[in-house]
Length: 303
Ligand code: GLU
Image (cartoon, rainbow, N blue to C red; front, top):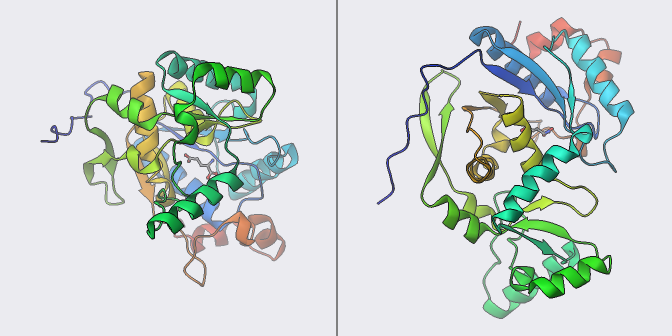
């Protein structure tokens, strides 16, 4: 029998703190503007502080000039943020600390598999079983667990030899330690509160630290949301499934679980999510074409 969802309402809740947290690996597009403006409107409604966090852990793809461009776009849109901007690339020690705590609980292990090998593995298993290899909610093949059984001496030897590796969460061990159903408080666009059940198992052994980065999106977002006292977390519906991992990590690290609100996404003419990778129109291009902050706000329903 699943346990009853816990009651997350706290009578002593202090002033809420919201955040907009873009990654500077491209310019902002209309989808980001929607997210930033949703945060602004929500902060106003709740009397909350609104912080800006630059999620630039990917040092190969995130560039300082793109971060500067994002800040210029947000200023142009007229969104005001409270407090100092937090840049994740300046806080790797915080994420290393969280990793060390998970390591002490024996919840992470090094994985030496390349993406190419993983794809090949999945293909071979599909051929063997005649069934599609399971994928995570983002469509990536679930990790088959090849390195999870590796003995510590072999892993240490390969690390000492400089072999590139990532660090993965041992999902089965993490769920066993969490011991039971995980939930998080949620509210919809009408403000209706509910409690969602998190199902982190569907993500398999997720990567928590990459080859050249001592962290990952999942780990740093959880550490920062807690450090900055963020609640509610207001972000796009596309990150709803990843919240399952975040709630598990909060549990394992002894961090509070914020309330969550996932806003609808802006879709392009083909019904696809706007994304930098698909060259969706940037705010900078719209500005050059004559759009104003008012016209963008009106277009997105915030006038
Ligand atoms: N940095 C993420 C992005 O740009 C958003 C993170 C979040 O809101 O949790 O997609």
